[in-house]
Each structure stands twice: as C-alpha cells, then as structure tokens.
Length: 121
Image 1 (cartoon, one colour):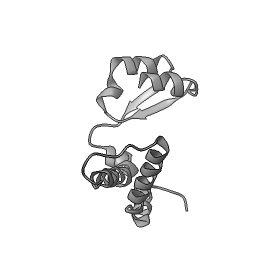
Image 2 (tube, helix red, strand yellow):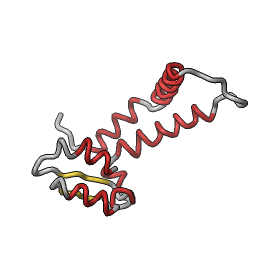
Image 3 (cartoon, rainbow, N blue to C red):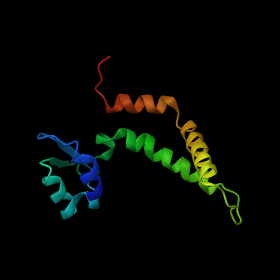
Image 4 (cartoon, rainbow, N blue to C red):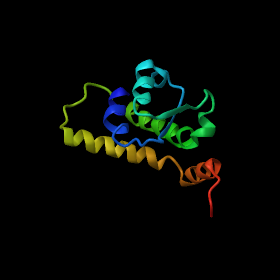
C-alpha cells in the first residue's frame, strides 16, 4: 500500500485531497497512515459493516463476479495441468472473466446504480 501511495497517489494528490478507505487492517497501519499524512491527504474511513451502503457496486457486482471467476477456475479438468505460454494464460484468463461477466445480469448492474444514487436524469 505504501508503494501505491508513493508511486500513484502522491504524484496526483493536491493540497485538498481526500481519500476514503474501508476499514481493512492494512489501511489503518501506522506506516500507511503516516505515508498519507506526508502527502497532506485527509483520510476518512468507512465504518465497518457499511460497505454495502458506501460501495454497492463492490458488494452487489464485484463480489459475485469474483465468485463466478473462482467457479470457472474450480471447474478446470483435474489432473496435472499442461504447460501453457503466457499468451495462452492471458487468453484463458480473459475468457474466464468474460464468462463470469456474462453471469452478472445487466439488470443487476442497473439496480445497483439506482441503489447508489441519487443520480440526475
């Protein structure tokens, strides 16, 4: 996380930057908090148990997507896997992600955006 702060956040942080993080233990580690303080960033933590309200896409779309991807991997043929090239591995992973995404219905994503609202129409 400190590496991300130094290489990604710090170069883009402005004087009035705010970073909202969930209550994951790593986010609250002293070295992470100190690194963010050195950038002048105001850090706010989402209270535990509030992820569903604060991050509905994470709860209602990303979590099921990750579960579907895991299922795709657990459905692999048993036995010793054959050696594959990096290109084949990327192609295989892409196909598994696409298959998992197809299991997440468009209606679900639409409902989540309305749940996250309010949005101007």
